[in-house]
Image (cartoon, rainbow over all chains, first blue to last red; front, side):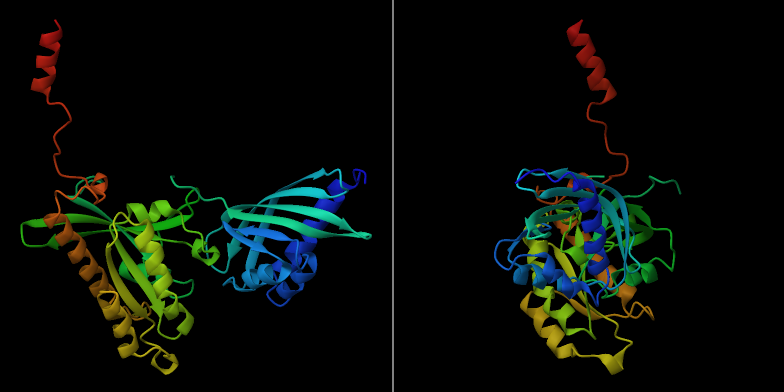
Length: 130
Length: 215
């Protein structure tokens, strides 16, 4: 497979769609369609998860209702298997908490005419010293 | 009193599931002051209060820093440095939320793994005692758990202020007692201590001797 020249649009489009589902508690369970039941990996704050079922258990267990999200940058690269590597830099505010910076990396793999999320790594950008 | 005029700087960390009332608890304790400082690099909030502590010896001015996890606990990610630097822990759960009570054990595990020692000073608080109609955890249940882990237990209400000051005072008393008894304990995070008129590393007389010796 070849590099997908539309990697920028795919990256931005995916991020928008993914967070629209994630940030709405009613729609969050629909994220299951983004992952493969066996081969998708997620690392959430250092916790390793494999398969859409385990990933969704983690995502739906998160204790917040309202999320305000501010995306600062979305950087994408095409991959030789036709996939797209995406890095998101942003800030999250849950309910009345102060905003926390975070970064999230996705690897999209082509599947028919579409994509699925094969890798997903999430971290809050908090450090051990001020 | 100037910014540095105190005998001890004591840091407490409030822990527990999101929604148990940690921020309200600290807000209530600091007389409803909103002037918290949010440090985004470490993702925490802190409030300060100065008080006079009367222990066995002379009265001491204590500068209390109260650290709040500011929502990062929702992601189950807590900068381990907070645990390490804290001298005492306020562990809160919500009397009207069973899950928050079941999580007490996990928080204790976390805390004992990352704190400056295996058995740091902790007080367990069953918060929202004013919401008696919605209570799902009885006082006896909570006391059982507190006894099992060897923790003092109080029922508190951040809304009315019930037992909030008492909880902090009990914890402060434990920490100050430990400090007085454990001068030789290298595990205690003494680097956080600010002693009054601490001698400089090299006195001026030693310094002049050194200079003389090199001449």
